[in-house]
Length: 146
Image (tube, rainbow, N blue to C red):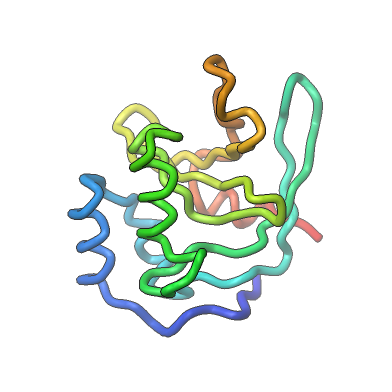
């Protein structure tokens, strides 16, 4: 796996501040990922999931970064989606695809660390549930293909 266009290194203190500000705790695997890469595009970048009983695909456009100061800023993305009630506050957007959909990591006790895909086209459908991708971030990253 290769990452490009990453942001400058961040600190555990900056990550803890995001957790405190949003009332969440990140899985340790995700914290290690942020400390190693802090955002960026990856290669390979394609993943598949089930949507309405059919296999679908998308790509990682960019992983959110700590203190990037742009649209990919992790704290800003959490606030935009969770603060406005668009998502459960414990489902955290960690990456975006080229169409503005999000890869999420769960910070809920019931499915802590699981990875999901959220299609923004379905957000106003009260029965919509994000598509399951994997049990862990590393499993998800290892499943990406070209």
